[in-house]
Length: 312
Image (tube, rainbow, N blue to C red; front, side, top):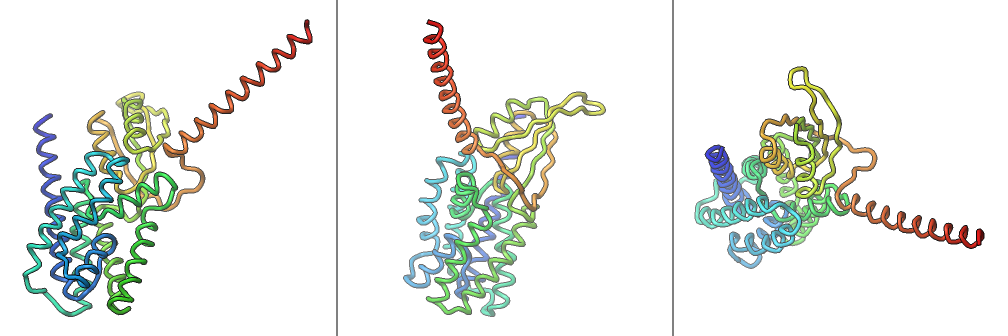
């Protein structure tokens, strides 16, 4: 069992490394030479690199540190560790590829091939539990606290970056950058095996309590519990949970740790209608319930005292 976990961890590390290297190659050999921006922290870094000639690798590390610090308080430790590693490898290889000659100076080729290769690299990193851009971490935190959609939050942030790029480098570069972003996003979704930010997980297990507790503690997600019966396996607990794309990997780790024999089905969610209770909502309702109970208790005590006075 321990050897299996070690091999799995090494494979994850290998693919995160490969994804970070591929993404760095796409940035340096296709986008930077044509002053085409990626989104998020990398896009800001490319702008600062073009304006002030500060090393791109150094900028990506420095600008991502605050996002990692913020994320470390709410996200899982493994996710933050993998993300920090991916960002470090990405920054190092940005400097490795920087002296090489750009593959093409044609803007359309740079947008198409750069977007596809970048999406492949970022998709590998996300699929195996990491993240290359701190803005997605913040988007997930905002989603957990305020229910802002992760994809839309990142898109709004990136549109702001591309608008700034239009003022500094010309609006043709901003439009090329926006087109690159959409190509990257589509390829990333294909690599990561999903076309939507929101996923639904159905888990069939014998250890419902432990799994639901871990999901609640680590992901801040509540779970719907149903009873089921397998044709061969007998009575089982069926768990249903809605989560974000980047949380799927951590959910798998939780299931493998608690019940490696559990059956998991993960599907896309195109739309959520109605209330979707999260940890923050549940805490809020609990506090309200406690206050209500206390108020009712006080009222009952008051009524009892009034009755006592009348009887006397």
